[in-house]
Picture 1: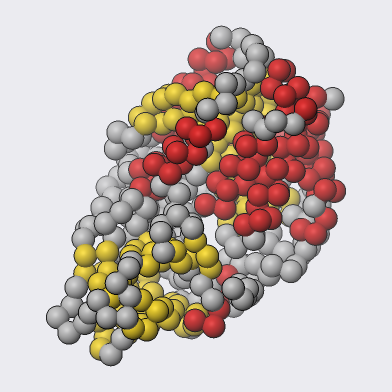
Picture 2 (picture 1 turned 135 degrees about the vertical axis):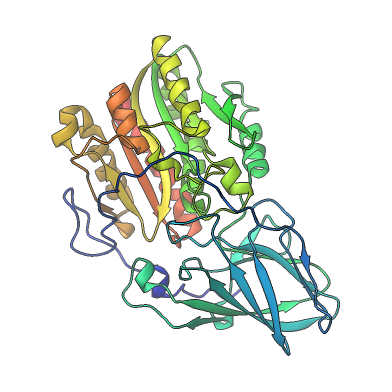
Length: 423
């Protein structure tokens, strides 16, 4: 299959390397500014209608009747052209328009699909699958920008709409914003890794819609020094999950380094912080209509409370948390640590870790945006440090970072962290 570069307009040039500094870099994605303080009290969300769209004068059908999908409306414009509407669960909301649907035709044909969004622009480059499990990026020759944005990163750089061309037949084709990792698929991965004798998983709470909040524990002894790793507070941020997946597989691997590490450290991992948002195809929020990574101070949502209560319980049992990481996705790879002005030398390990990863992966240097503000503690990183003295980082991967590099970066990150913590 011929490989095409994803357009720069989607936030990353796959061939560029960015300068890495501790105070921010002069090139590449510079990251977002300080987060505004917002209320995290539950507010309404609009659950999408689930069903199949059929048209009297067309043989083409669309469906969102599977977990992880989001499709809010379809119009047949005539010939083989269709307009799709993708709307958010509520507003205001981060511009992360998730879409996911199946399309098929009783008569094989080529169709054009135009994506439109309510109050947003087109952030995610389409992924295509025939089985809902194995995805590939759409060939760039079958992709069209409508009203392109300006610049290289952020929502202003994204096009207002996109149009794609697909060959469809009687077998459904999945079209999604990112690879489809629903709560069921994540649990399959957890169960597979838990076949190892030193890996277990158990429930630590329920989501707002009643889905289990599952935690995976990696422990080959009775080590009381511990790590806390979380992922997927925001449903579309699949690249962060994929790097975290490789990170955890390396910590649970068969290397001599991993075996020695597990005798001295316990790893706790919540791989899916927002199962309701993921399965409902949300752009960003949980079913309470809240960005979970703004709720680590008020704890109004059951998902953040489950992790808070777990950490408190483990601290009372004598665990010392020595490192925390929260895996996310954004426009390009970037690290968000707490500045050593806040943490002192205790937090130096985070910067040593970043430098070690950069030394091992010089082909993709990543910017650093360190925060010198510990309060408010509304994001996970700040809560981890404020409540447990745990050096922590928000570890962000680009939406379009190549998947083989995500896997390698997760592996290298785990190896370098084990080396530093074992020193």
